[in-house]
Amino acid sequence: MLRITARLLALVVGIGLVSPCLHAQQKPASAGHQWWQNAVFYEIYPRSFADSNGDGIGDLNGIASKLDYLQALGVDAIWIAPCFPSPQVDFGYDVSDYENIDKMYGTLADFDRLEKLGKEHGIKIILDFVVNHTSDQHPWFINSASSSTARKRDWYIWRAGKAANQPPNNWISAFGGSAWQWDAKTNQYYYHFFYPQQPDLNWRNPAVKDAMFGVASWWYKRGVAGFRLDAVDTLFEDPALRDNATLPGKNKQGDPNMKNENNTKLPEVHQVLQGLRQVSDKYDAVLIGETWTADVNELKQYYGEHGNELQMPMDLMFTELKFSAPVFRQHIAGIDASGRWPVYVIGNHDIVRSWNRYGDGKHNDEIAKDMAALYLTLRGTPIMYYGEEIGMQNNDPVRKEDVKDPIGRTGWPTEIGRDGERTPMQWNDTANAGFTTGIPWLPIPVTYKTYNVADELKDPNSILNWYKGLLALRHQDQALLEGEYIALNQDDPNVLSYLRRYKDEAALVVINMSASPQKVNFDLSKQGFGSGVVKTLLTTQPSLKNASSVKQLSLEPFAVYIGEVTK
Ligand code: GLC
Ligand code: CA
Image (cartoon, rainbow, N blue to C red):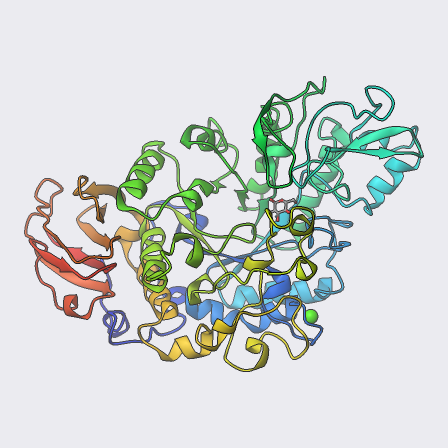
């Protein structure tokens, strides 16, 4: 299953550092997988990754300067959150020009350079396509709002109120207040699922569709390898604008809870996704979806009935699970049974960092390693979030006046906003964590003194070296890349165990998700690996480095063991 090399042997924890470029040089032949199935994706929030010009805000040249790091880490594709011209009301998710780069991030020439350098590093570029809405400063909206007979009036959703001072219906914006903004100039309301500065496009208008599909082609021709599609759920609204049912209680913005039945997840979304897929297929590109779903069935729909929609709708339910072996076992079984290619995510720029979210307050570093082992060895494609590989933690504002994210100001103190999970990447223990020579746009937590790239690279037991080991292993091991998922010891309340089996090869993954020592036994004869013989590939537990049998393994609290089993 593995090409055993000196480098690979060095992966076993305790021996230490993994050589860079390993994955880029040697990839096992694939069993018909597409490039994105064997790839590891990494989300970059461009404001916060690396600042090259000292203005306190990250930029494209900053990203370019860190490609060596990303390659050595084992990243194959970066998804850059929106870096297009924008008034930055929602930090780039309010786009005023889809075919350019915001000055604060650089220029199109910088983008082309980044892409070229990316190619040299084996790293593809994925852009963030904000499909539901534009900025209110986009020329399309400026024209649309200029008069009720404007050429682009019907590019957005304009309606008369129900009566004087009454919006067309009861829909609530996800970011607080009515989803309708009154426009005194033309005596109508326009619709915005997010901020009023983010008017929703009217996807029922074929001209909008053509323009947006044109944007996709424009970037594909420039060499991007795909898009992460923002907020796909919200593309369509009921043309009759029927009220939503209200639910008991209030949300974090103090608005009534609501069933978004008439303005999210309308079936028409799927036609757009099919259309976007036809465009992307011409370029061997991948479509990733921001797909918040209630269950596996809902998630399944985003792949398309004939696999003709998103290749990679994110399983964001994963981020909502409690850290517990039975809970994860059950969820993974459901996803696996769907027959689709899973896309696992443990964090992003909208949710509390994984270190805090899964952590128990005492063993967060160990739990971070468990979560890494889990989602990097499951069948599917992982999408990492920058900084998670060094155990970055939320740094939440404690005073309303420090909040930058608008929802944190309108919702304070119930909703404190998303600043905490968007703080600058921690490169080293010098001032500003090596992120900028200026004043960082968000404050860096004091924990950067120990949780940073430079120091963790030197520590063989760091979270960073654990990630590097896992990623290198994942790129080399045919069973981890291609193998089926087989759950083991399904009644164990503490230890999550599974096999990844590919032809005559199999990797055994064992994760003690409890704070107490555990003993586990495996009889793998039913799965065709009855010898009981194992060779350690990677473990957090030094005493297991030389384990030779899976008949019994004694695990320390939160230990991870990954071994190659034989027939
Ligand atoms: C998505 C983005 C989020 C943004 C919202 C509106 O959920 O991830 O950051 O605020 O869309 O564009
Ligand atoms: Ca900058």
